[in-house]
Image (cartoon, rainbow, N blue to C red; front, side, top):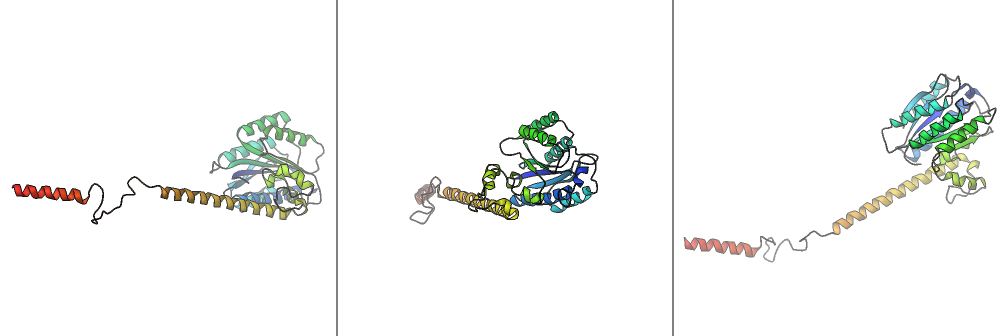
Amino acid sequence: MPLQAAMIVVDNSESSRNGDYQPSRFDAQADAINIMFESITQSNPESSVGLMSMGGKGPEVLSTLTTERGKLLDGLHRTKKKISGSCHLATGIQIASLALKHRQNKSQRQRIIVFVCSPVADDEKKLVSLAKKMKKGNIDIDFVLFGDLDDDDVQKKLEAFNTAVKAGENSHLVVVPPSGKLLSDQLITTPILLGEGAAGGSSGMAEGGGGDFGDFDFDPSADPELALALRMSMEEENARQAKQAKDEEEAAKKTNLEDIEEEGEKQPLLNEQGEPSGSGSAEGKKDNKKGDDDKMDTS
């Protein structure tokens, strides 16, 4: 994963109490957020993660961008007591984008990851307009839609948003239907955690191929934890090789600069008489001495 600043938006609306994901939809999000934090910060130690909620009376920033896992866990603990109301998707994304603008490292790529497990009241036209605004601001938006919702209206709105905001393979919509697996385990094999290029390899992984895991030929969905470990190990190795190549290139440049001779560098520092060569040669000094002697004789 590239250097990034990611704001994760948790859905703490009344629907997050539902138990179709054990022990509840909210706790499933908390577990997945923990995995996301680990994946983002370990792939690049300078990346930072923030957290906010979009349910209850309105969106609330629970933790500004940080590299400390404890701040996110504390925010999740506090917001678990505030599960109520409906989700405020559009407002939540706007506040998250403002939080990203205050990131200390401006070279960090801006990213918002939104968990949705409840009906969305915002109309599609408003969401598409917001998506275009986010795209103009170079902000990637990822959606995790999960839970057994009554209709397909939410998915259609998120698909329209994703189509409008998408630039290349930077923004994703992942739909996770209820199953016996943990939400976090199912997210490990998605482009949201695997990074860019995983979307193209996802079809190959579904057919049992190695996907984005090089020579490791296995189905990531069979062992999500091993898939994540391999992915992170490969990213660390690629980073090490890139650093080594950069160091070797800088060393080569330094060697080339040392080999360049300055003007007059071939001329020896001392002449045959053991005196400094160049303009202050022995002959010049001898002539000067002779001139001084002549001057003395004249006087």
